[in-house]
Length: 153
Image (cartoon, rainbow, N blue to C red; front, side, top):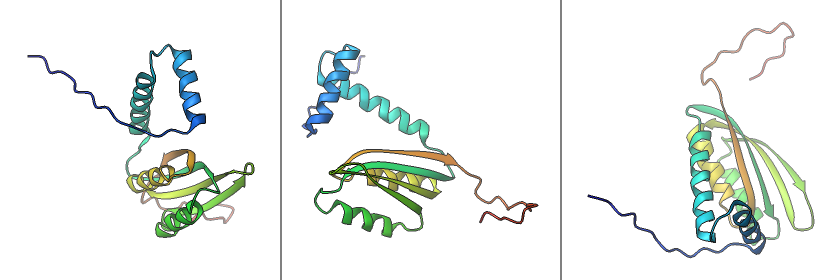
């Protein structure tokens, strides 16, 4: 007995510049249509996401570029970070041009919580690009005595 795959038709909205990049990548890689490359990119992204997710405690760098003029985006981002102040340590804000800002935020905590928070930030409307790099850490490691007297808490 053969099980047939059921395909779903969906409608998505994509910015013109992103669609141009998708079309160029499709042509360069030999895809027949947009659906094929979007499915391929989605599969690759899901696979990469699964591989990049450590378990336990981690430190992470969340990097994202956003449209600072997008409706209430700056306010929503601040509210998100205040709501999870236990995860974020520091943020670097860089003005890229008249429309775009980049932020790099250092995060620390349980990997699943860090991943969930980072995904939520990246998914905000107006965020054009985002990536999180997660590095596993030892959860209950006791600090060593150091000869130079500098402790890392």
